Length: 488
Image (tube, rainbow, N blue to C red; front, side, top):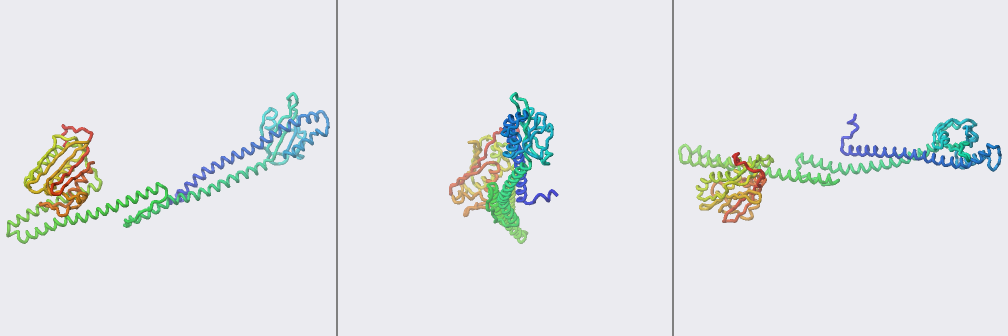
């Protein structure tokens, strides 16, 4: 049942919440104000009656004294004075003596009797002011009563003046007050409902638009965009969604291009392998030299294919945002090890290599295998693109809170217009091909992605015909490296 009362839509829930809060707040305010005004009405009438009773008590002191002495002066006739005063202020005036016997009353319905110890009578005798609301036995209605003492010159109570008015007129005024409050509350509630509907639409409308765009994108229409509207927070949500959608489109475009390029790059070595295998099947049995030649080429193609697959897998892991395990490393021993590994390749290419690395470097937060892949790629490129008789350099230094690894060569260099694109995947510089087995255009992209995953960046300087210099910048860590632990 509770679920049926609560709307399922956001707009309905917002409207219901606003109305509930308004009803609670406004209803409480109207109730408190109405009760206060109701009390104020009674208090004001009671105050006015008490003031009138005191004035009348003071005016009746002398007439009451003469009446008690038996004088019948028409100018001071007590009965006439009481009736005239009651008619002028529209109240019932009752005079009682010190024994609480009714002497006169402006209301003919009130018969001679002895007043009971009503609260206003007792308070007046004691010199206090107090009103009382009770059922009147003479008029058969509820009335408000007050009383004031009539004192002689010595301050003794000679009698009492009792004033009363019917509560019906007061209740009528109270009803009119409550009606005014409820009318004003109704107007405020109507205004609140209209404002709540407008506000809810301003919030829900853009969200509904965002929902439609999201559903369209989920159905495959990725070109959708949201028009930011509504409050600032909803507009920020719309702009954030548009940025996210743009990033998704770009990511999907990169993935499609990546898959297409990867398929193209894999097709070439696979086709080459297939052709050589066919040649071996046709002519290999009768020609051992040809068999050896093709097997050597197949081995090179397999190495190239293996390297391509390794690069693709590494880039895929980086794209997925998988963090690389890192630890404080001294890169100097690793660089010396890599220099030894490429030494035979350098000699076979007819090149010279220079290693300028200090015995120790400040620790950097990195992964040793990742650094190995980075530096080895740069060294392999330097060897491939440097002609016979050239030089390859591997340097490292620590400065300005970072470790810089420099791989330089005296090779062909890179034209300036290609420098901004060399780190893009599958990008090759037109007209520049290594004289040995070419790459797939993934090495430098893998270098940049891996260096950035380690918190650093890579820069390049190149002059056509003079060579290229790649510099890896890795921030140092504050954690000291324990030389006894064998970390490298």
